[in-house]
Image (tube, rainbow, N blue to C red; front, side):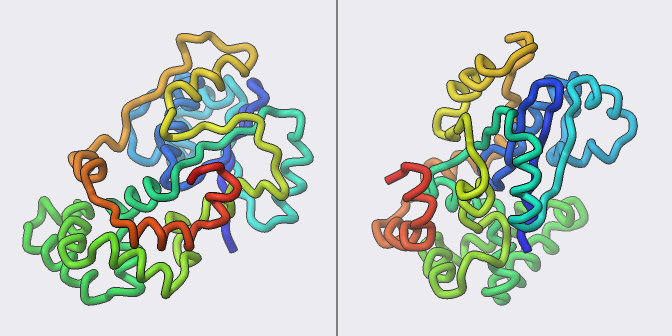
Amino acid sequence: MLTIHILLSKELELAYIKVPKNASTTMTSAFFHLAGVDADVDQPLNLFHDPAFKSQFDSIGLEWHQITGPADLERFFESYSSYLWTASVRDPVGRLVSAYFNKLNRYTKRFAKGVFCYGKAMQAIGGPKAWDNNRLAIEAMRRKLSLDDLVKGLVRNGIDFDMHFRPQSDFIRPDIIRLDKVIRVEHLEADFRSLAASVRSTEPDMWTLPTLNSTTLEKGRSSIEVTPQAKQGIYEIYRSDYDILGYS
């Protein structure tokens, strides 16, 4: 069953739904900054397990909740329905391209084992320094499996196998949750400023977006050609997101 992660600030009366592949690490780090936590980590939610940061998180009542099941989600929303609810959303094409560049191993391990093994072998050949760098394996996998191949595979195999490939609507649950502010990744800074203006009791200069996940892969993401066939396949796969989020 899908687990939905929600960042909740009781001081700011703000709830943020974490949607994978939608600048969620950047957004989470921005909320941490509001609490005075500016640790440089790839997975900022891990800091909730570090007692050294507890007092800072408590300063804005920042909590991390994991909700499983629609009934629990509905109860949780009812408990905080007076809060401002927000989530970041993304064009399904851009979101899948992002997953292709850094989550392809999740797909190949399950549905293209030969490609997965090839990528891991190339990573191993790189020596000890490469063994912890999963991006090298994914880069090799992309040489064997194109974006078109991935889309065809998702059409064939489905998208429920991993949270990074599931529809955004599975996380924001418009049938249960009322979103007051939508932050579009394509307009991240402007929408983030708009969110800041809607939240009480904060200093404007505290609302800053860190630059995260800006790897050398970004150039490849922006230059990759998405064929008409791939776009059509993505539309078929993520039709619910297109209908709900207003992308075309």
